[in-house]
Image (cartoon, rainbow, N blue to C red; front, side, top):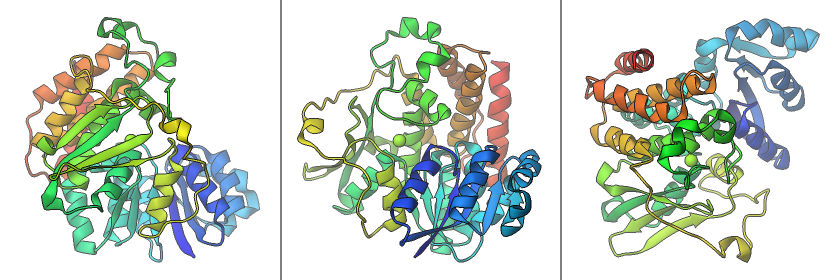
Length: 382
Ligand code: MG
């Protein structure tokens, strides 16, 4: 029986994780459920899965959670706020911490889980983008594993098992290209929130869906790959693959290209992180000859998607650039979602903030958080 702590339980990754646990209830047991503010759903999940600990990330929502649970609140230990998230992730006796919280607010969970030496199933790419070298050093020190849940990085992780690091020529990250793959750049200024929220192949939360439309998601994934796999910028490439069947590829120096494929579903990477190095029967159909019928690959348009150039820049320069890229993007997306700035402004403002940044090449955690805060303020000044 593997003991699972699930962070972001009410979001898209969380719901898929719980589907896996339901399908394999003799293998997995939920010990911790943590959500941000969706107290009703968290309470419902708590009564179904009976974890020991419940965490509500937004402190003000704790009262509401207790009110909904009523006398049953006493069945659980309830923690709240960012400190509660970090504390829960560091509790002993956990086999896997599945981390599906979105954004920089997920960093404390990554730190807590690794400090305790737990396996971290990481869907929160932002923490790796912000603090990759710190998380890697912590994982080494505490003998903790980081298993990526991001579909591309799960693919790369699997492909990399087919050779040795020194023989690697390239990591090839695939990208769906999002809903505006074919849209001329001149029309970006008129893109509405509603249009940006319609993703052609993946069903995900709102922030990552906007990030897919801007391809800032891929920019973050370039940096994520740089740190997860200790591969320099020159060995990372992005290829547009609209069908999202090939989840990524590795090119070895002998010319072999190894890929991992399947219908787009996050259940595969989540379950893999929970069972690696073992595999377990899947819960969805991922193979039929038809889905492999018509696969296309081509180079991305970096004149249009300047996000990719910024991602490569952050991967090359390292230091605080990853934190700045991530924070500037989060802040710009939040402003776009509130209707304060246009779609094209996301690219322009993040680019300006990256240009203005005075980097720290070897930052500690506080300096990373300072760079994050600076970038958010700087977006407002653009
Ligand atoms: Mg991805």
